Structures are given as structure tokens and as C-alpha cells.
Image 1 (cartoon, one colour):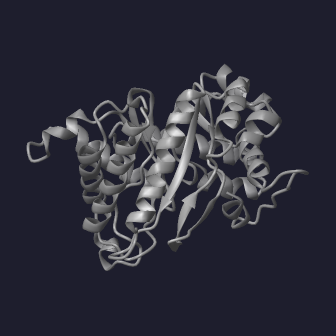
Image 2 (cartoon, one colour; image 1 turned 135 degrees about the vertical axis):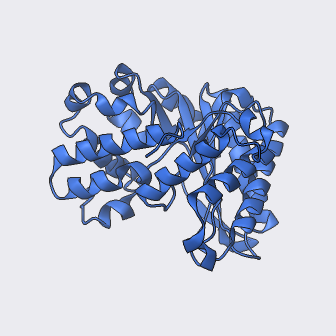
Image 3 (tube, one colour; image 1 turned 60 degrees about the vertical axis):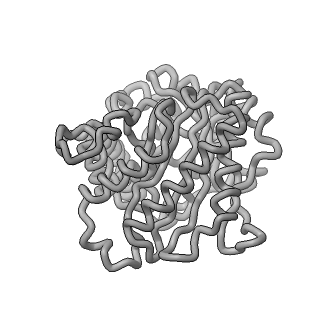
Length: 327
């Protein structure tokens, strides 16, 4: 998140004794919506009508005691659980997410501070042929399943996030294939660890062509919506409580278009769509960049009122897209 703030020429201030700028950046984003400590979140309630949960860094959750403020607005506080990604020894170009060793005590502390859910991101590289490797898929699926089991042990709802990268040259068919593989592997490992799927969520990416594939410019939102619904129908067990999409590197407008498209497909009465789409759990959003882009542009320029309005407008648009309404 520091990179996207700095890209808008916004300085981030590192707190003493912090290992990275995650806490300070998240504090900045908290100030973007409610700049004067906790007061404006009470007075500017409208954006909270469209957002039911907020994922915090542990520093923001614990040091700034933000959970009671969010809970007072009917917003469920959550916490990011993964720490960093190291190169996979057998395939150095692929990441292996870290943070399992001390996960249980960290999550117990987060729950004591007011968190009620938690998230673990596992990036998956994807190209037309060589990535991801089987080892890359299995190590990330294993980390997500162990995270989910430990989260439930700590009394928190886990959100597993297989973030399939679309920076390379995979076409839409290849993207669907990789998504189905990783999601299926995750739930196979969740079964091995006894994860209660009814008490869990998944945060997938949209199935889409890679940025270097020539079909990306001509692939419609409806095609991406249909491909994404197909992935979910093939790989997500029916007992999973919900699906919350990530926005990844998408623009604000594309993230909303794709969210609207997949919900339109799933809710469509058309007979040419598979019946299994109707059995999918609710499809909604868990956007970071997809919510904050416009607001951050204004906030960097000192326009706090404009930033709040931009954030509220984007939250409302995402809320409508999650219902397949016109946006």
C-alpha cells in the first residue's frame, strides 16, 4: 500500500519500532476517511451504509484501538494475517506467503483487540504455459488452509485469498484453468485440516486474460463475468458462506464492471447459463485499490471533503454492482 500512496506523491511516515510502513500507511487511509481521529467516522455515516467490514493492519487495530469505533457504526473489524512472501526454493520466481509460525498468538491478540475475521493473501503467478508450477500451487494452498484452521481455532472467520496475477500473457481459458486448480486445491487442503467451510469466506480474483495477451483489450466484462462464475461453480464448495472479490491491479471502474458482470450472470434468468450458478453463495466485494483510488487522488491534494465524497460514491457503486444493478 505504501507504493500506491507514494505513486500519488503522498509521504508516508514510518513509526518507530515498525518493521514496515504497513501500519502508518493504514493509519493514513484511516485518516483519509476520518482525518480527525475518530470523530468524523461518527459524523460521516453514509459510506458505512455500503461497507460491512474493514480489514486492518495489526498496528492499526491494536495501537489505534479502531475496532470499537468501527463496531459502533455496525462495521465488523478484521485483520490481515499474512506477513511477507519469500521466493519458493524450487521455483524462485514464485512467492511463498509467510506468517504461519506465530499466527495463533497474533490472531488471539487481534481477537482480544476486537477483530472478528482475518485474511491471508497468497499471490499466484500465471502465464500462458510455465506458471504457476505445481509446487507453487500446492505451497500456497497449504498456507491458506493452515491459516484458515488456525483462524477458526482463534475464534475468527478466515478469508482465504488466492490472488491470481494477470500481468503476463495467459488467455482467458488459461486463467480459468489456473483459478479452478488453485481454488480446488485450497478446499482439498481445508478438508484435510478440518476447516468449517460454513464459517469461512474466499476472496478470489476475477478470471481474465493477462495484460500481455492480445485478447485483453477485446474481452468484454460479460465474458469475464461468465468465466469467473464458471470458475466458482466448478471449484467452490456449496457450504462456503460467501465470496468477496479482490480488485487487484484493476482500475476502479474495471473492478466495478467485473463485479457487476459476474452478479448479472449469476442472477440472470437466461437458460443458456448453467443451473449451478444459482447455487453460488453471495458474491460481493473486498476492494482496497478498487475503493480508494479516486479518494486518494483528492486526499493527496488536500481535498479531504472531496476525498470523503469520492470514497462514499465508490462504496455506493460497489454496493450496487454486488447486486448486479446498473452502474
